[in-house]
Image (cartoon, rainbow, N blue to C red; front, side):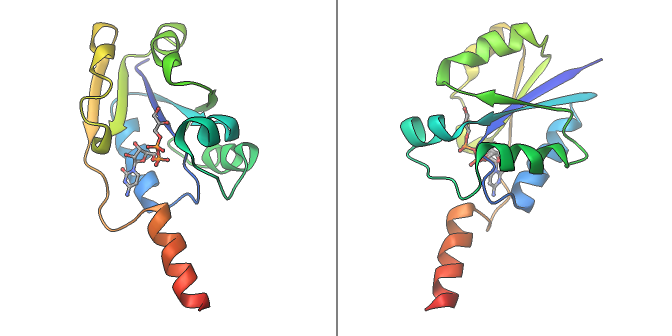
Length: 132
Ligand code: C2G
């Protein structure tokens, strides 16, 4: 069984995220999503999520490509995760191009093109415009 892992916040889950998860799954048979906790998002990414960790986890677990959701609590857990979950391939969107190449010692590292024209920030901006 080929195991794939990816990381993210996945808040306001949208088709850009689904495109990423779908393509990530194509690299193996089992896809693990390390989902940023609310604390990690706030302390390390200055992101205030609309949906809580539990709500975002519930949404991801309903996605057909996702086999397991685990918490992402810090920047430095990736190497341990890759070993602990026997990961063959690490996948991220190419906005992270090169940032995780240190993992090449332990697994394949793949950066996939982001889906253009969609982001949580854009969604929030569009909604704000509609309200005004
Ligand atoms: N993504 C994408 N296309 C978009 C938006 C996002 O392909 N239009 C991808 C991102 O490149 C990322 C994944 O979807 O691989 C999740 O995106 P975010 O939730 O924004 O993840 P991020 O906050 O970048 O967290 O340790 C890594 C971090 O946790 C990544």
